[in-house]
Amino acid sequence: MPNRNDVVEKAGQLYAGNYHCCEAIILAVSEYMGMKNDLLLKVSTPFGGGMINGATCGSLLAAYLCMGIFRGRSLENESRKNACEPANRIFQKFCCKYGSPNCSDIVGYDKNDPKVVELYGQKVKREVCIPLTKEVTRWILEELNHE
Image (tube, rainbow, N blue to C red; front, side, top):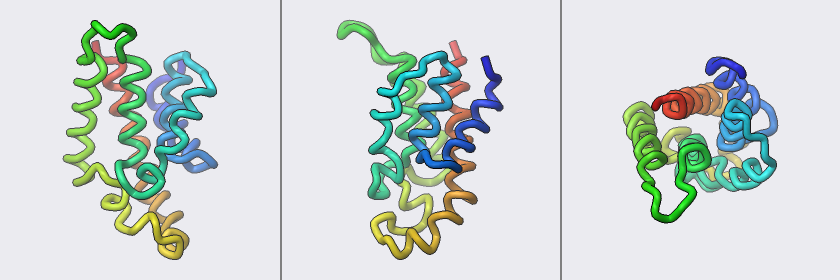
């Protein structure tokens, strides 16, 4: 099993490649957890770029997906707290550190403006989004390894 730092770095590398933030985290964390499943990538596809339109950050959404996948309930009468409480802790850390849960607020431009995305997208991805994705991956692993 890879160590946590390797998983964090892998998420950053996947995002630097052809995956977006949510996909990169889901792929890196699911591999770490021993669950390789094409469905996880498919489910995470529409969440990058703040649900494609600059809304909630895809990395934050990946945290919620990971808590559901790996800590969620299997039966309707089970408690939701094993998934919801750690997801909320990550949400609180995220908002405290980045000031907003929204992608457009964090990157500082309108994700719906193709000219602006072309001008700033790659620079912001390198300087803001990849480090953010790695930080959220670290928080997810902390929560998943917390008993």
